Amino acid sequence: MRKYKCKYDIEFQDLKEIMDFVAEKYGDNIGFIYKNADRTSKTEITYKKFREDLDALGAYLISKGLKGKRIVVIGPNSYQWLVAYYAVVINVGTVVPLDKGLPEEEIVNSLVKCKADAIIYDESLGMDFDSIIKKKGVAAKTLIPMSDFTQEKMPELAAMIKKYKPEFKVIDKHATDIIVFTSGTSADARAAQLSQRNIASTIAAMRKVEPIFEDDVEMILLPLHHVFGNQGVLMFISNGCTNVFCSGLKYVQKELKEYGVTAFFCVPLIIESMINKVLKTAEKEGKLQKLETGRKISKALMKVGIDVRRKIFKDVIDGLGGKLRFLISGAAGLDLKILEYATDFGILTVQGYGLTETSPTIASESYFYRRPGSVGHAMPGVEVMINDPDEDGIGELFAQGPNIMKGYLDDDKANEEVFVNGWFNTGDLARIDEDGYIFLTGRKKNVIVLKNGKNIYPEEIEALIGKIPYVVENVVMGEPDGDDYRLVAHIVYDPEAEEVKGKSEEYIQTMADADIELISREMPSFKRIKQVYLRTEPFEKTTTQKIKRRKIKTGK
Image 1: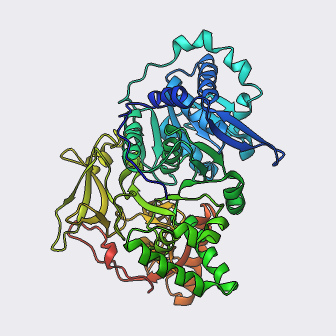
Image 2: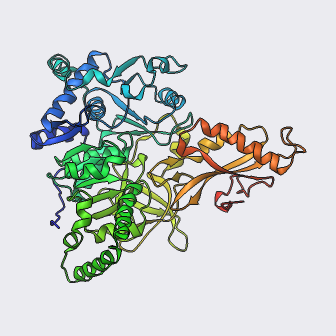
Image 3: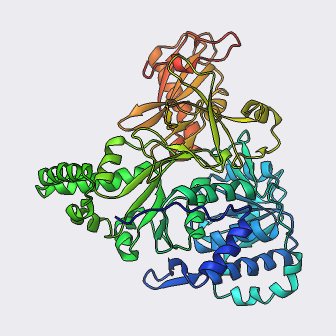
């Protein structure tokens, strides 16, 4: 294992500074590799070329009258997506990344809420954006397909730089330059306003504690519209690494080897899938006992300072591409058994924690600081505290630092809820031990976090269920389903309502199941209700008439 040393070199102030730094220091490095349409040939982009592309597209967008405008970027992960995102941020206006998987209605809601002026989109989505921008309330008037700035067209756009570069925006590191929706989204979704300083501070902090090197090869797996996925790529960019675009989850194993991938950011589901495959293969080949013996030997040697893990488990490492050494997991808790296996195999695996509102990292483990079950220490420059701890030291986790968002867009009420005396209330329950390690003990308020990193805000679904005539009140929860969760709805119905009066329980259950199914059909698959529990007794409430969700048991 190579020796690690923290870097305390640059305290980045904005994203333009990062891009200029990378172009100057790592300009000749291959920054990005992606497969072409033929699926066999590849395109390689240096950091110098990447920086030039950002200015070329910036000039093109300004020629379209978009200086200072809010611009949505939507599409699957791609080099063009990255160019669009960062060209807007450092040269043009405010960027609004949207999830490509949103239904059309939610895309429209997002466009209305953020008051988008333009949309940069990938034609592969097959969406009729001409029709979308004609919807009521949508202000966007300019559509720019990503085919406008393919590599073949970049020379034409680059010719515009000389004319339009004087019009590039002047960076205000504290201005709202990024708007990110925190849920899936609906008309009631919250949109976090982030500044360049917010994001740049997390990159500077991570460079101080995480072992990422210029010769690393990162695989881009997480969606770039998500702050965690985007931050991960920017972290590798800031270190001059090579970033490769994964062709899809089913190609991960093959492309780990093809590209010689050494590290990546991911959600627990990916790590668990990789390690479980190793264990199943060992079992199938009758090598499970040999693997466990190897773990015992390596652990004993580690206690006396001898690290031969990657030699003992060479077959495992080779099966994961041969060079994989570092994984950063976030968005949900990683199974500690899986974490132990990955570590025992010689793959440094750490957990991080944060929120969209915190750009996103609040805390992370590192090579130097790891404690099973924790999410590590607060990041450099970030302060944390437990508000009103109970007898076990558990309370809501508050945070302060340059990474905290400016606030939710057009939502004073929500801002009053989360900002308390200069601190940001994460809404997560946690405790901090005597050595500063943070242990999360509860979900963020009511949010349900699936193993694949998807966040589900139950209030969004509850509002729809509440429109059913015979429903008095309802609660949507995540019910344990193996090592993940499935969505269930607990419904209090009025037995005297016209629709159900005099009907049998079986009849009412069948009708409720059917009504919930109609709602679920309009939602992404991960938001669909899998079980409906009916009752006539009201839920237990607080003195302010808020439902005590924790009192509701899974099942009947």
